[in-house]
Image 1: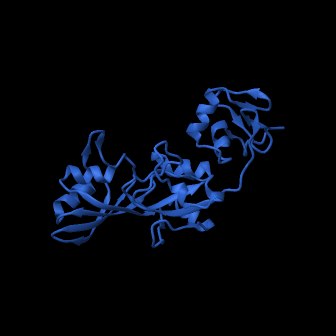
Image 2: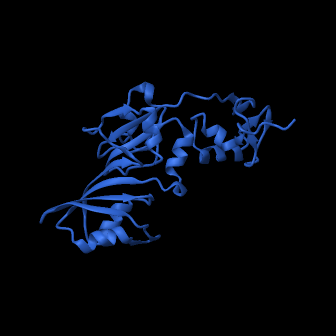
Amino acid sequence: MHEDKSNRMRLNRAIASTGICSRREADVLISEGRVTVNGQPVTDFSCNVDPRKDKLLIDGKPLFQKKHEYIVLYKPKGVITTCSDERGRKSVLDLLPPAMRHLKPVGRLDRDSEGMLILTNDGELAHALAHPSRHVSKIYRVTVQGKISERALLELAKGVRLSEGMTQPAQVRAIKKGEEHSTFEIVIKEGKNRQIRRMCAKLGYHVTRLVRVGIGALQLRLKEPGEWRHLKAQEVGQLLK
């Protein structure tokens, strides 16, 4: 009789699916010998397990499959996206009720940026959204000082050379061009550190406001910074479109 492998998965994926940490963090736990499977320490990253049948422990404590929760938050400017900060700066978790502070932000928005942020305990979804191979679209509304030229918009769309190489082609749409400020929308499928700000700076434009308004096919639909709400099941599916 052959073994049913339909529920078997890599150990790091099984750990991440409980919501306790990401796959990368799970790899660290495995490498440190802190994970046991059916009573045996496992340091082999290629180990496959069945979370329904195998007993997984970290530091001697059992792992349980948790009910997945998903929320969308309008991150205000001046708030950081880390779960804690040694400098005591306000974190996105401070905007949530205490009962929701076990959730983790997916990806990051720098402190000076605002807009759509997903928080969840679903390590699998977090990994899928953050992994470059998935090419998940992220939509931003950008305001810069001065009147932006058509040439600059074309350069942003074609790609801009940063210190780590060329940015990937993007979709760019002008919204408003004024002598003092201009606003445009840009859709990117990568996430280099402070990428849009650096792209604009390379072309001679200073970003005064940067708002993420969409991830995948999901739109922000929250009006005020600091607002949040639970995502519906169909909205979770839209994130990866």
